[in-house]
Amino acid sequence: MVDTEIKNLNSPFGSLYQIVRISRPVHWIKNLSLFAALIFSGNFLEGNLFTKVLLAFFSFSFAASAIYIFNDIADAERDKLHPIKKDRPIASGRLSLFPALLAMFGYVFVSLYIAVNLNTLFLLSVSAYLSIQALYSLGLKNFHIIDILIIASGFFLRVYGGAFVIDAHLSVWFLLCVISVALFLASGKRRAELGTIPEGKTRISLTKYRRDLLNSYVTMFGNAAWMSWALFTFFESPTPITRVWILLAEISRTTAISKLLMATIPVVIFGIMRYEALIFENRSEAPEKLFLTDKELVGSALLWIGLVIWILYGGVTSLG
View (tube, rainbow, N blue to C red):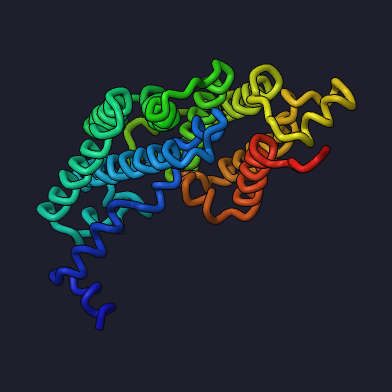
């Protein structure tokens, strides 16, 4: 009965289902980057701060969903020419304009309401994200290079939004790592789109990119990403306080506790190499889906997160 209602485009269930689809909750995985500052500042186990970042996560998630709807409304005619995007709710005609607009403004209101109740700098981050992404949808996405920079800015604002909400310091090396990873993901997305639709019919900026140019962007930012992470782990990684790490530091200066995050470098390199392989197979048009479905990427991401949390917060504490 429910399935029949969902398939009935004129039913309340049908509209609700399409609103969920157009909101793209799977893309909310990008907003997990808001927890970066919480983890690397050593405050991941602080309940009050964790709650603040969790609220920030939902604020950015609702803002992102609002932008997805706005973009789909602005791009409906062009999406109809895309082999995948033609099935989106508005482009396919499964969702009318009024409920889409209602959902969009509702998401914006909830997002800003949460942000207002956190702090001013976080509110500015969310507002900047909404403004920049709206301008992107209205036309900036048609300018090559600028479109990649704007996509990357979304990742940057997320990470720093998470830092603003808990008033945490992020080192310059970590900042460079965030920027490099953001540009790597953005250029990889464009490279995959170019491989899927060589003519660039559904995205004007693609007509201005050469395959070799995007290949060089992907390679350049991929190298910058792992290198900046390596420099962060060497120069400015947080110092673990658990006794097992202190014991290692006493055994040898080579295993000094300020360098233990360097153990994650091979995992980062593997993850970047795997993602580059997927880019050149034209499979990275939707990176958030790859990070949920590709076994190698999922495994490397979980291993990296596990190592980081273990090094910063774990270890054997009963020694001595």
